[in-house]
Image (cartoon, rainbow, N blue to C red):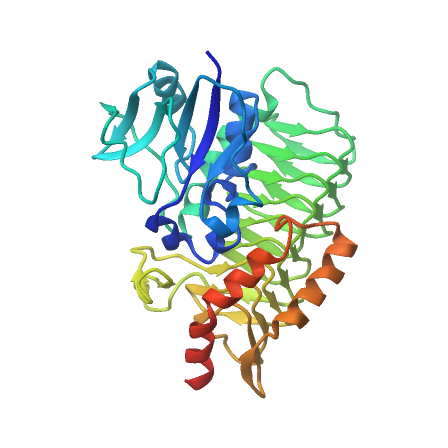
Length: 400
């Protein structure tokens, strides 16, 4: 029997992942080398569809195919070998359950509505851990284990391209795709894997210590220092010092400065000298702004840095506080510490706090995408919707 693979996130819980879930389904988040949907696509060898919010559905469609049943996977769930075995054993009319919440289901009929429960299906309880992205910080917290999963997934049965003798190589846990340029680089895979994507460019004097994943056509500039648990998305540029962080596609942290315990969205830019704090001087736990509750949420973590939504940009020498949340499309040029929460499409300078005019933003985005050839949004209606939905947050900032 053939099946359709569907990632489901048409639920209230997706709001806990804002600002990253504002412009994409949860199944399109990047954790590890791949996005979640890329993992499932690679696992099953077929395209995946989405059941998501109305304004995202056209850009991320539900694939119509002549299949006998559907495998519905909660989009925030991350694959593991144990989960794949459990899904394989699942029969049509059954769903996997962990602590009372559904994880995956096989059904002949696609579910309809918000916050589905699959109460009509036979429930199969699982006794192994389920990794799930519930909050923004979970992206970098789960990134290390997913780097290993993706490394094994992408390299199984394949041979790596050869590295030149100009590099310093420690260990053999390295996979290089064809077309990558790697010269004069220190690659230490003694404790974790290093994956280098197609046509990536790692420049001389760079230091990489696994676990590290470099996406296709990404650039690691001269003298970069990438510690363990770092993912650099396709066509992104990175420089300076990076640790425990995920940088999504077509983004740039191209100069000196520190990025740690952070997640940077699609199409972002961090100006030269920009750094973030990820540890409070009193060693207390870090709080993040939570779109779902409208207040600060205690992460229970002592280390948590910067969460930056898509197409946000910061000027040179920007300084981000511990536990900062920057909304989609925010533009920041402040000489002082940046507020811990900057609403989507805000325009912050030393002279004024105002909003980024939508037409101006869309014109900028068109120019940027023309040069970088990036458009994961597949149209601007998503941007218009996010702009409208976050208007009240900008008003609060400006009035304050």
